Length: 311
Image (cartoon, rainbow, N blue to C red):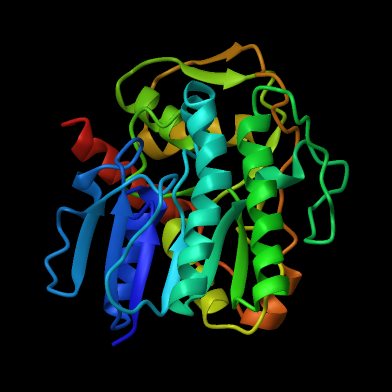
């Protein structure tokens, strides 16, 4: 039975990964300091092969026994979180990644870094391939997250080249699904909460900025395939179906049959105008592409939000 550590394992993505790995026969150690994660996300895991450790990975990590895989997902990921927790975001990207890589070196474990499409910044190339170096404002408010992940990628590759660690880097594009927080701050949770409670849907800017939304089960499948691959450089995992934020707002209103109105608020500083993954590499080396269509994914996510809102 392979033994796997998931940092940030009580978060939205981390908790889905923990469940997936358990179903694949892994023993899973879930590590989280619950700063943005929640024990509720892992409360239904009833498996003797699952262990939870409350720990901040920006401090030295000690795990007894062997480890075969380390998946480093610890980090605030929503703009409202990393704007509220800028120092913690930078520390987990730098110190946390360093600590997790040190553990991978000590345990001779495979290491997978959860990076992000935000390394591309407000892109000047569209769609974004892995070869694109990005257009990031390092001193802007979003820079704390963007640069933390860019540093994390750099130190991961340094450990691979210098110490021969078997590393992987996944660049995650916009993902949605059950276990997103009601007050997550990103488009789909915002719109669902507003539509289901009769509030106005707040669209930033004029709504023409684009995103590409991948359902969480598709994303987790892609991450696992990358973990088991021999590829060491970054790989985009996301859904290439691009749509405007205004189109998503309309889609949410349709899915919820809500009478809510759409209102427009100022666009946040350095908010990317476009976001669409080029997934040619994932198709080629992982034989992966998303399968869950938006209507199906939104139906599942809507049910989760209705349950959380007691509707």
